[in-house]
Length: 544
Image (cartoon, rainbow, N blue to C red; front, side, top):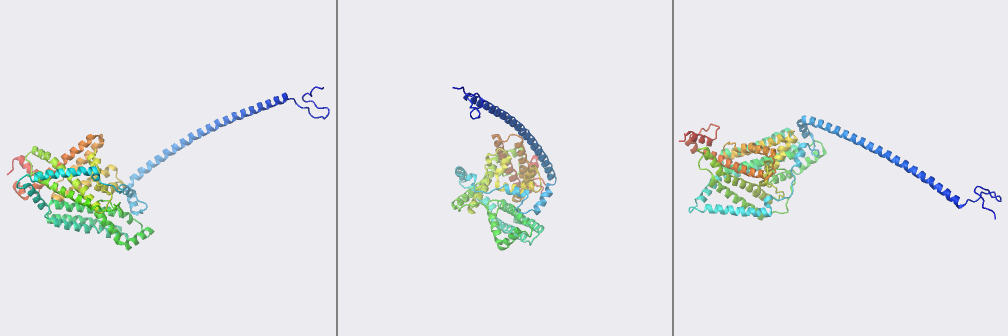
């Protein structure tokens, strides 16, 4: 038996390579595996090196990109700052030019500010909720009970007689006042034909503006003429002046809101459609404005949120509340008005103010409840006007700014929309300047209404409103205003301020009676108030 052929030997019979043994094959396989492992390891090392290289490239690229983005951001911000400064320098004339040429689809900044501030939605008054209305009923019953006990306490009912006499004296010209109010209502409706003539091309822009200003002047002149000619007593004069102020603000709101359509360029498709619609249905806009004339809002919209139906039981309840408020107001005037036209000393003046603080605040609260709650909600219920947020919780305000915003939202929304926003958006004034101008105009109008109602100029309300009121606003801003102490401060100033108003205005009203003027030989040509002339005579010992 021969030995196996050694590796690499050739078989002598066939000449083919000799067969390898198992150990040789295993060694070759192990060598091949080692080579593959070495290649895999080398490939892994190269992959890791490539990954590290890519990571470094990505990180460096991201840092560079972030740096470039930051540089671009700084460049854009600096450019915007420079552009804003340039726009601020030429803001007023530029915006006024845009307001004259822009279309309704592209409102100016003034339009945007005007449209965005007031959103109508269905909501109830704060005192209309169940808990608050229950408190109101308790308060009304308690007050009426106290008044009834005091009125009927005397056997001869002298208190009731004084109340009836005061009503007869105050409302003896009621028929004249109602005639003037009706005339004002029909006069202010002319604002709709003026817009229709302007929109249909029969009036130019300048002619329409002149006619609108003339219409405003006619409305105010009618009220002033009626009060001065017929010498209306304060209750009737107050009714007329409130109506003329209401119609004037509604006319301005309608003119401003519809003025955006009047700026549409003639010849455009939208202009043609609007002109055709006005010619086809000229009474459509009039119907909308008539509803707006009676609606409890001063901001004009074509459509308002509406309720499903009118609850006449609520209307009767509001009417009863209003009559009770009128009765209580007359009672307070009868019981608390001073009987002397002046004061003998400074201590007497201070005592009169302190004595008038509670009656003055009671009149203030009755004016709020009677007008902003009962009167407004009654008309809202009759007209199915759903948005009844005529006021907010002003009694919890911790600053005068918050109090002014919450106290009377009906007038406040109008001031914000057509005074403050126009001062900011159209005139380009700063927030502070726009706010101060709005307060100044509002205080001047309030003082004018009081002067026409009482028949004399005595700017006490103007000083308290535009003077101390604005000062207290800045005082709240200078110090912490979210503490309860500021609410105490607000109520303290309301007490004292209403006492001052009741004392000074009532004394001046009594001092202007003909008998008092003759008795104290008052100089009617002097600018000094009559009551202060009497006070000076008391101080000098010259009282007859």
